[in-house]
Image (cartoon, rainbow, N blue to C red):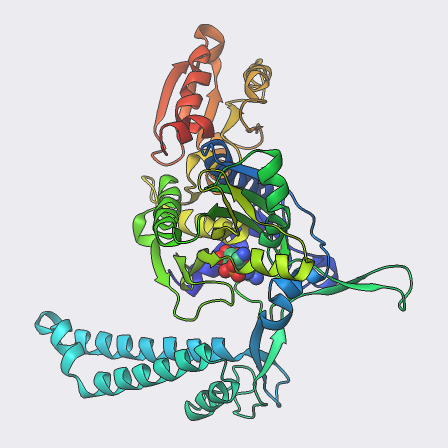
Length: 512
Ligand code: GAP
């Protein structure tokens, strides 16, 4: 996928009512977005698909909805006050601020693309005689770039591991990385920057308490874990799932809804016996990848990335990465969080929050396996991999959003062929009977071909056309979004037809 494709995604999502820039009339607020009339339907479907797979399909997982604010000591205990930082660097000429690690990552990507450019050049020159493997192994220019990449990557990963800000700065200087705006190498020192937003509780400045907008929903689960365990009589292993907003003062917020300052997470904390974390880590890695694949997106879009630098709370961690239009990036994190959070909450609150294990007849602090996915990233993943332009029979082009059908904003559109002879009334009557079961829409404006295109562009799987024959024999035509094939069926079989292919519950029961 290319940056051209990415631009198309952003403009399509605006033009067709999926995502708008927040506060657009005031020139927008950077990295904050609003979900529009079609976007909210797609987003809600994604959340429903996740919630049902987690909570409904697992006997031992329940859901909660905790508050965005929590006692400020929460964030001391969780380590976010001390360790939730990004390394930042300013360019003195452009006055622009960057994440030092992003600048280095971008530099490494540029070096990689130089190898690719060299390869393309030689491929063109030698045509069929070109041998890629030999070329990559022996070409002096490529070998030099490769060695440089290896050296820089090693220094970079050591600097990250050791939180070595001076080394990060040295890498930027040694690689002669320039500011993309000013083009100069006039950098400040690298500093740590805490990503949490602060606000205050209380009427006056002097009496008020500093609160933080939560940077992850997980802590709300930890604070409630024992209450939930006791009131739901859960036994280890058990999970608590939650969907909710999180906030991060991201230094570089770019790439549309990929990195936002206000976003939504779907997180599940799975409480387990200490010592069993390796097995559960493996289990959730597989289960979560299977969940993604169950939506029908091609496997080549996904890959695992195991973390070298572990977050302050983890003993093992990986990302499920997705091939976004700007390359493979993190979509979901799977973290073995040990007892870090619960132990610290016990320490900072001075309250016992141990679990009593009736089988072992002893108390202990459970270990935690976490799966954490951003709703907005999931949205971008399905949206970007579904948007295609294709040539059709009459040589014209159509833009179609080939979303997994069960999560499409509208499951079907009702289109009377003409706006007369009782056809609109008939179409509305059929829609009326299905509207609570499925999300449906109606359109009688413009020629039928244009209406099909509009539905293709928002990803509606089926267009139901009502014509004169419908009045005679109670049949309708069902047009499939992807194949564009039309089938004539009886009105009374429509619900069954839609149930089979579009009902999330049926889909989940069949295992996706
Ligand atoms: N509780 C663990 C945690 O928050 P994380 O890897 O920092 O881990 C989990 O975040 C997921 O949240 C990411 O995989 C990503 O999908 C999403 N996410 C994180 N920061 C985001 C941002 N600024 N904008 C959109 N989504 C974000």
